[in-house]
Length: 119
Image (cartoon, rainbow, N blue to C red; front, side, top):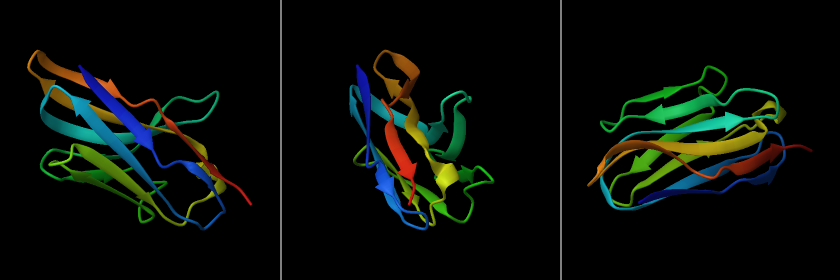
């Protein structure tokens, strides 16, 4: 019914930048809160940034001032601009969204995209 596809990850040097993208497709009526999470092996998945349907944002303290989340409702997309990347930002990043379809509202995950920050 609904699919989220993450992209944009890769290898970047400390201090560099990356932009992650997430495209939602399927029988979408409307999209509510959207966010990015990240996970490293052996640790729980953590919220990095989120944006509500009204455009309000919140960020993990560790990324405030460096990361920016944005959304394009017309294209059913959400983005994460990541600047001043640090080695501790290395993780698999997952897109997440609350989406309403003709059959109800559900929470959906992307497949994840690897971000590696290393010299």
